[in-house]
Length: 147
Length: 126
Image 1 (cartoon, one colour):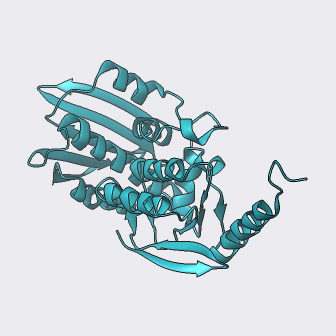
Image 2 (cartoon, rainbow over the protein chains, first blue to last red):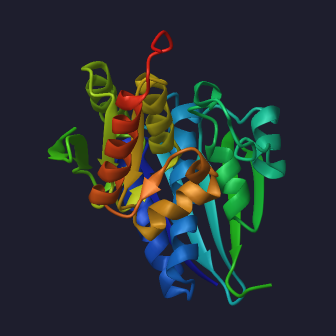
C-alpha cells in the first residue's frame, strides 16, 4: 500500500489542487482517462462539501485527503473537523437519492443544487462515513480492475 | 467572468474563458450569464471548448441561467469536451440541455427556430 497525504486550507480555491493530484494518481495507477475524471469529480464534490457544509464556507481550517493505492483499490480518505454530516446526508451519500434520475418536462422545477453526494455515490465503488474523535472521515474507494 | 462574444448567424455565442467551472468561480459565472439573459439576449450559445472540468455547482449555475432566460429564450451549449460531457450524462443533464458539436451548428439551430417563430402567425391573425 502506497500513501500520499495532502492538506489544503478550507478554501474553495484550493480544491482543484488536491483534485488534480487525485486525477494524476488515478492515471498513474492504471485507470483510464474517463474513470480518472470521474474520480476527480468525486474528490471535488467531497472537498467542496466539506468546506461549504462542515466549515460553512469559512477558510482557515484543515482539510486532509489521504490517497492510498493497493493492488486492488485506490482509496481516498477525507478528514475535516467541522460540523458532522446529518443522518439524511449520510443516507444520500451511501444509498443514493435519485436526484439525477428524473427527466424533467418543465425546466423551472429542475433543482440547481444537491447533486454532489449523489455524484459521489454513483462514481465510487464503495462509500462510507464515520465521525471519529471530533473529525469527519469520508472513505471513498475505487477498484483498480474491472469487477 | 470573461466571455468572448461573437455573433454567428445573428445569434450570440459566448465562449467561456475558464478551464474549470467549479464552486469558487461559480458565483461570478452565474452572475455574468444571468446578466446576459436579463439584458435581452434571449438566445445564447455557450461555447464550452475551453472548459476542461465542471462540477455540480457549475451545472447548477447553468440550470439557474436556463431558468433566468425562461421560456421566451434559449440557452444551448456547444463544443463540450469528453470529460464535461461525462458530467452531463452522469447527471442526465444531457436530456435538459441541447449540446451541439460546434458554435456554427448551435447558432444555425437557434437561428432556424427563431426564424420559424417569427413566421408563426399571431393567435389573432387569420
